[in-house]
Amino acid sequence: MDEIAALLEPHIPALRRYAWVLLRDHEAADDLVQDCLERAVSRWRLRRRDGDLKAWLFAIQHNLFIDGLRRRRRELLRVDSDQVPDIAAHGVEQESRAALRDILACLDALPAEQRAVILLVGVEDLSYEEAARVLDIPIGTVMSRLSRGRERLRGMLDAGSGAQPVLRRVK
Amino acid sequence: MTGPERPIGEDDLTALVDGRLAPERAGLLEVYLASRPEEAARVQADRAIRASLRERLAAKAAEPIPARLRAAAVIAEQRRARRAQLMQVLAACLVLTLGGAGGWFARDLSDRVWGAPARPTPLPQEALAAHRIFTVEAVHPVEVKADQEAHLAQWLSKRLGRRLSIPDLEGVGFRLIGGRLLPAGPSDVAAQLMYAAADGSRLTLYVRCGEAGRWDLRVSKLGDFASATWAAGGYGYALSGSLDPDRLMMVARAAHSDMAGGG
Image 1 (spheres, rainbow over the protein chains, first blue to last red):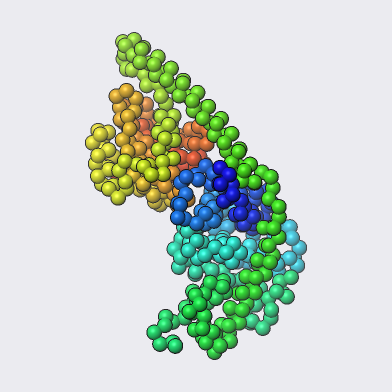
Image 2 (cartoon, rainbow over the protein chains, first blue to last red):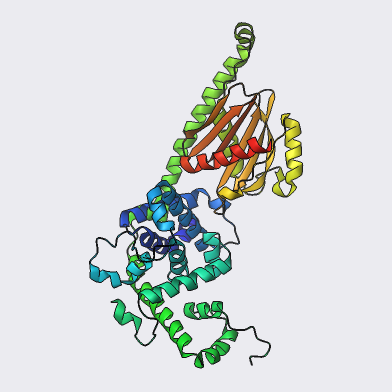
């Protein structure tokens, strides 16, 4: 049991961060992580020995997040729609207009599926294969969602011209 | 240098942004981008966006882990819950055993008085008992694996005394692992089909003969588990797993309609 704890703990900060970006609520995010850890412990023997623990944990958490979305149907409709690049999702309303230029506001404006790969690969450092396993999609789909998502972000941050350093515009 | 090499693709540019480019492609990419300032600028911009997103989110991962998310706390809580659940199951078994024994001794009486022997074990409990025993098996979860699906269907159909069509649940995220035959009560048999989702979670579909009742799909909860059952034509069906009841119901509808359509 101590061995399980020692293997799980290093991944908790990343799981909390991913949960928070998806839910944008500290308590709800930690609830999701707790559900994920409980499920991981109860299914510990079912994990693939040769598999990567990090990808397995992210897959469990991602599926729990999707299950939660299904329960809240209205949110599902909003998040799953591919056609809402201009409508910023939850959390943005409370923030000031200046914050709309914030990178997170732009991320929120992406379709959920593009947001997930950008976070898993770009922030959580999962390999393309691992991200494909987490989301249960082919690796080619991971690559195309990544490049489409990044293209949209670039457009939103008006960095396409390339001359302007992005960091200055973001902060 | 560019002779036999694979041509540059979007995936190379993506890998360059993520720092995941294979070293042998790096030189090729450098040459390629040197003559294409627009694409080089795009890679540059993507890298900057990636870096600023990481910077923006770094603080969240650096926060101290709350006590309730300490792995040791989660494990301890789970142990406690499992003990409580075990007690619940033991209590249920005791009730079933007493009920079964009572039913056995009273069978002549009940046969005479009511015409048919009473079956004391409700279908969801019976199916969940089988679910709990076999889904934790990592090595031998099933007797016959899914790669012999036709044989499995034929065998179980023969033993159940009805044509059993194995529902295809891939559309709702569950892949068939295989199935097994089980005793059900003193004289009946049951089939158990097992399915797995991509995250390793397992579902079982339990089909038993000798079911006197008849009812439409409904969900019962027992601890962390839920079971969606229906019964018709002398057969009882139970789909069990540790899913939330809405999702279970969705999968059960798929199984129900698939079985009704297929036989």
